[in-house]
Figure (cartoon, rainbow, N blue to C red):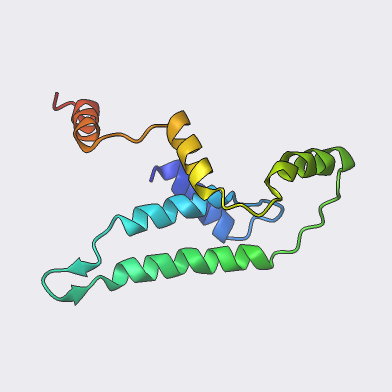
Length: 124
C-alpha cells in the first residue's frame, strides 16, 4: 500500500468525523491480507495474518455502528428502484454478473501476469 493510502487509513481510524470509508478499501485490505501464507514454516500458523484480518473486520464493524443522517432524494431512489426492478424475479444472477464482469475486464493468464510484472519492475 502506498503511503498516502496508509495516511488516509490512519486518519480514518483516528476518527475524522463526517468521512465515510468506501467498502472497496476494506476489500482491498482483506485481499492483500489473504495473499499472505496461512502457515509460516512447516507447522506454524500465521497469526499475524489472522490479527490483520481481525483489525480490518473490527474497522468494518466500527463504521457500521456510525450513525449517518442521510436524506432520501426521490429522484435517486426512483432511479435505483427502476434499475433493480428487472432483477426482482428471484433468479440467481451471480453467474450472469460474473460473466459480465469477465467480459468487461478479462482475467489475466498467469504467464501474462508474470510477464507484465517483470516488465513493470524493469527486468524485461
